[in-house]
Image 1: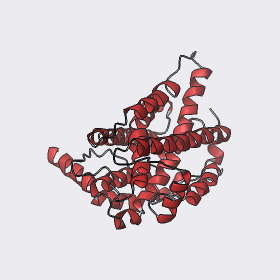
Image 2 (image 1 turned 90 degrees about the vertical axis):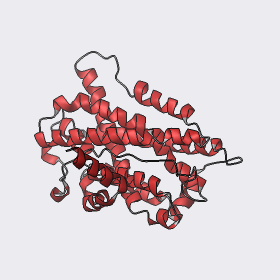
Image 3 (image 1 turned 30 degrees about the horizontal axis):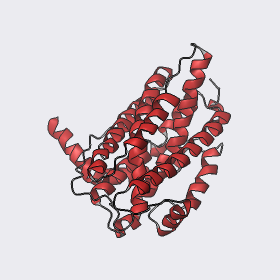
Length: 304
């Protein structure tokens, strides 16, 4: 493991919060296929989350259970355990949207089968000899999760502030799912990075795995958006393009291309720490008002 403790980026101390999984549930009966009225492209671009996250976050949990024995800091261990609980709940919540899509005539199985293969086979455990080869593959995946979490936190911060979705009448249940998830991504945004710095911290690995993760996310997202648009039963010759993404970003219904590009040097800066981005206060405030999160809290208190 690299000895990087002397040059670790410094977190914002006030941003730390104890993490807990919220056992949320959502009812999709009243949610239309195009949950952002009149905008199938934005709807389906965001819907790609439901295709990627169930398998991806199960993979996070699987990798982190393997790295738990390497954690020597008790507070970080608690953070990672809280992160595991939240990610498992995210996977379940997005997975439960898929039957609703099928009922609306849009079967995501051909795409999700490919995503499952990616995380379970290509990025899954490998038959490697014990020692350095096995350790190398574990550290590669821990670093890749850190890079991915940079973008999930970026998207979480964006959706918490995407008022254009409200103005355009986005379905409230879908919006609550996205903002509950986004708020928890902001809430735990430093955990993956802190874990990587704790068990490895190699800057070369951070930069290399960022490039891999970013390229894969762009490829998978545009492929998923095209899959949805081409298979939407209400559209004739549905298409998705980077021009559509850029246009929706300028309209405020998706992140802007410029914001996405500017996020790159921030993560690659040697002084980067995730707590320097987003607002834990805003995330916690949303979780205190989220219909799904408050209902989960009430059920938990009732059970107690």
